[in-house]
Image: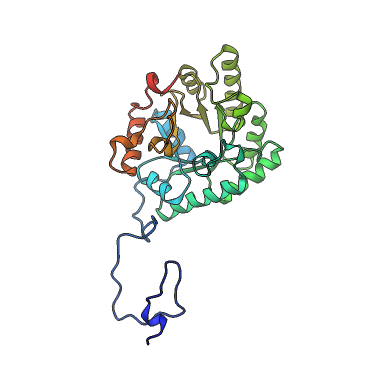
Length: 316
């Protein structure tokens, strides 16, 4: 009976015999690979790598910035190929991927794991998207030094920028990180990590007092060096005014109207992968698309052409 290496019949994916028999002909190449992985040689990138100067140029030119969440290598590569400028490894993965009731239970170790996965997906596909990673709950509130330690872990995992939630007390932390070479995206309005303190998933900045506080925090964060600012569930008029006021900080809206410098959605939401009721600010781009890539391309086009969001349907 021929030995196991010669037969090759017992080969399983991921395992290799100690020695392979000599081959008389080169194996036929295949354009596909198993298990959702990427081809060994991806085409050259079709655009320049997205950078902070490039994002600022887009903001100044009035070109809308597109952002989606990504939690794994394959979806990251597809979103990049579809033209998304920014990918966010959001702590929303706690609810989307882990089944947690909120983002509070997500750990720094989990964020590092998913950031590494997304970064590998971009690298293998020669992706050019700007990669942002969330600092999870409890990883930056204790001290500025704790924030730097956590940020460094995410940057080593492949992130180009870190995102943190809240205003007021966070401004000195943002300045501390930026001065040490860590680009920061801030996050105001509905901040999911403090959803219990906010009393639920509610629109923020509706009263004059709340709007004034949000304006003050936004200016402080820009002055501290934040290059981007996510505005979540903020009245559209207020978000548009903040976008005009913040000349050095690109606003990214989610449920904040079309007047922001860019838009972000949770990937699974915009693909309709939700068994419950969709949030008001979500549109299912998959329903008219023939593929995931097609749905993401439709999202990019709709944001660029300012067809999404529609303030009458998706904002307050």
